[in-house]
Structures are given as C-alpha cells and as structure tokens.
Length: 314
Image (cartoon, rainbow, N blue to C red; front, side):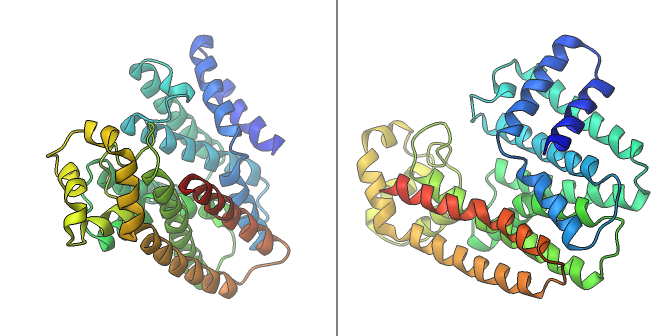
C-alpha cells in the first residue's frame, strides 16, 4: 500500500505546480488513505487472481483509487454532506478545481502508462455508467424498487467494475470471466449500497436520507404500503410537511420505520444479492490464494457494515 500512496502523491507533484493548490489536493488524498485503499486492493487482487503480469499494476491500482476519489468528491458536493471532508471545508470553486485537477491527472497518467485506446474507452464507459446512475440519484427520479436496483448497479456497481477492470485490462481474461466479474461487481454494489441505505434511514444527521427525502430501497417499500399509519411520512415525502415534522416526531418516525417492515424487506433483497454474488464467485476461474483475498476485501466491509447498522438500529 505504500506503493499506492507513493504513486498518488507522485501524480500531484508531476502534474500540479501551485503549492497552495497542491496542499488541498494532498489533504484530499490523505483523507482517502484513511479508507485503507480498499478500491486499489480490489484492483491488485483481481490482477493477481487472474494471473496478470503488468509491470505497471501498482500505478493502475493508484489510478483506481484516484478515480473513485473523484466520484466520491462529486457525490459529497452534490449531496452537501460529509462536511468534515477536506473538499467540503473549502469554497465550492476550489473544490471543483480539485476535482478537475484530479481528473486531468488521471487522464495524463493513463497516457503516460501507454494504455491502449480500447482500454481508455472502456474506463470512460464505466465512469459514464456510474455518472448516469449518480444523476438518477441526485434528481431523485427513482420511484420503484426495480428502478432503484438499476440505478444502484449503475452508480455503485460501476465502481466495483472499474476496480476489477483496472486489474484485468490488457491481460488474458476470457469473455466468460469478464461477464462474471461484471455481474459480481453489480451484486457487490447493491450489497453495500443497500447496507448504507438501511443505516442512513435511521439517522438524523447530515447523512440522513430522511432529511434529504431520498428514495432508497427501504423507503420505496414503505411508501408503497397502503396504511393510514404511514400517511404523515408519505405527506413528508410529497413535500406537504417540512423537516420540522421529523424533529418533532423523531421517535414516532423511527417506530413507523421499524413497524413497516421496510428494513426487513431491504435485508431480504440484500440477502438475495449476497447469495447470487456467492454463486458467481464460485464460478470464477481464478487462482488461489488471490481469489480468496479478493473475496475477503470485497465482502469484508459488508460484514462490518451489518454490525454497524445493527448497533445504530438498537
């Protein structure tokens, strides 16, 4: 992981020259490092389990980390949450410049690595797919569970697709294995996003989905129930009640959420995704012990998130 960090900071030194601006970019990278470089680890383990031999794999893994950071920064700026992040502590114009600088550095690094045109095109397609899903989330256009599943696969599943693709791009990988990785990535995106949605539904801080009136999987289920007990919450989502309603009726709202069965519904959908992911994983033609390492990285945060959500709900 020291190599990953070294390559990330090298990109700043190579492509940026204003010292004040570089200090902001370094702060953003330092914050990303606190996430243990999970995305780059997926790239490295994918490369290893498929028998990759690229001499530039650590630079490619660093690019994975940088591209995901860019998407995370944009997500926070759009949602105006995660207020403690370095990019949220500066004027919007500076934060946008940081996003542009990282994107420019990523493009330059792809060129420096001599990555072939079709690989660069595929990276662009994966990022575009994620942005399309992100846009649906931002404008809150999802109205049914099926639309939610598609949106989440686009937004979150694409991040896993990117991390995997940066590991096997240009290597010998059968079309069957590529398709399995795509399906697995979308399942993993759903698993983690549903976990986040369950956690963020029962909180009342800047990350609260209720305060933002976000239509996530559990809330879509709740809003579909024809029961007078949920009338006020439906009125709130329809814009007929202000956020003050949540402040006054916090305990009652939490009770409505628990009584509705929406969290149990979300867990059932999530468990189906987990089962499908396990089936796809077993079919992957990949080398040990890196295949097991890949699973540990991709599934590890899920287990921790389940425990965290249980603590929040209790």
